[in-house]
Image (tube, rainbow, N blue to C red; front, side):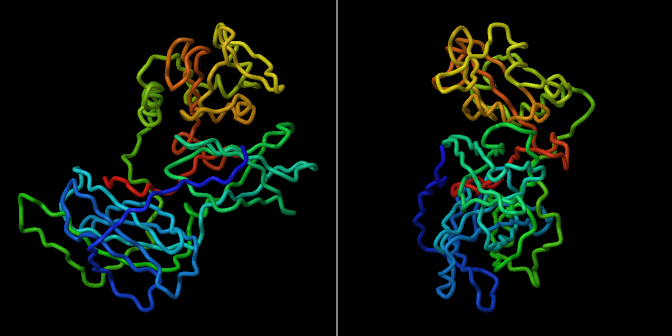
Length: 384
């Protein structure tokens, strides 16, 4: 499927905004909030607009860094700025402490694109194939031409939350591709403009909380490690079961976690990594599973003469994608026999769920052809 990939976001109509932003000279961005004093459970709406003289900027990205003023704790969100406007909201989670917070908006002219370079080109390489898997969205695939230096870049793309992208040669022949992937949104970026607003989460029991303070000479530090995670750290220890349990808690959800399946561990065992062919490995490991050539000439898995469903990171995928997966980069495989429903419309031929390594589970600076990438924050998210 080769098509433009865009998610349509429904705009939020916001009225009665107050504006308590740090003054700037000739600002490009104008920020407004529906309220600067909130309590846990409230929804904070904000509206970012470009000044009239900068309306020609059609696409950009807005990074929101929230900083708890007393502790320096930070939260990071990123949003698409389309046609000079952003309307979004954050629900205030019950776990957030009462206090004063700085909302630092930073505009980046870049927008998400598939961008990188082929590190091990072969003579005939002039295109690179990609497949983008994102939960609850259609699979997106396409071909990108390679420049003289074997670099490639796509048009702007817009997707929410996270996705996994796989690269391959169009013919699926030749050595495994080694890709240098560049995500401008998750690397150091040039700030075109910034603006800061201050809000208070009030304590409904203690009314002494100072509301709407604007600290003297407040400045958001750009020298911090801005890309550190705000999620609780996962401690990986020597116990293999603990590592696998941690991974499953983070990555297995819905029916995939609600029913029992056979698990093949790729985090602490080299069994999957040593496989020369993933299809052959699966048929060897799973009694009753076999390979069948489809009418289109591609190989697929069948179980009890029924096609087996394939999921990559809980996203339904076509069997030919298994050709592009490097076995050493698989964290875990879960196998569900025929008759066990784990997703809508699956069961008759069983289900194979493949989970890829990412984050702390993936070896750094290792040549690879697949990447876990973060997209934009949903326009109706929860701050916690």
